[in-house]
Image (tube, rainbow, N blue to C red):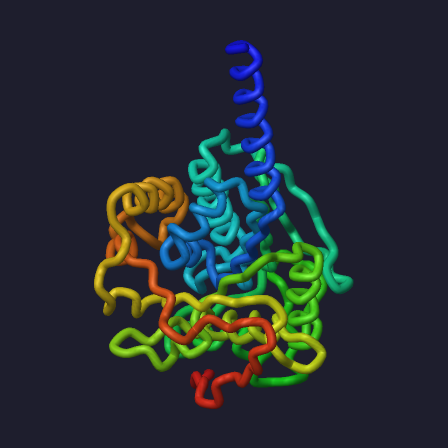
Length: 299
């Protein structure tokens, strides 16, 4: 009798574990960020928690994250290597990835899948904003230009086919249609209003384009979208501590040695903060009205 009872107990535990694993594997999240490192600094530990839970995790980088003072593609690839190392540590597996070109809305897009996990990173290689007019930079970047100039054509720095605003948004929408996430994340679409630390132009433009991609035929929010504060998170009280703060730093320590533009403590304020502003969760069916005051001077 004892043996039968024990066998039944073990069977129930195994069934429960199987159901828990299956439930985790069917939960999908997609996080949209402008640059390689925005996810690690401003959306962790939420993304790390998804990975640890075994969710299907997609992270989409809406620009190449290059700077005007370095070779664009070489630097973008360095940052990609940093992200790979960071997510391998997040998942506690070897840093082994499989490259997969996927097609979204007729566009070939570079993706990397972390072997043995449900983690996929998606890279658009769109030209990002960097520097100012007086130093040979581009203070607007292609995301902003697509938003404000309808006919503008954005050409990915890796040579893939060009985008207009409509085809870029269509590509992002196609990612959502393929991934079928339970919810998505973006930066703040009103981050340019933040004080005392207005957000980067790419952060805001990426959030607005993500929101546009997350619309149904009636131009209402299709999938729940949570917005996260970027640079201005330093103005908020600390809200990440203990295990998750340690994990956030541990993951960041895998990234930053690959990125010569940052140091370990470049954004140390972010280690103990993750800010989702009140009122910036957009539920399905919510009308979307983009901000009308997002303006950045060009050259």
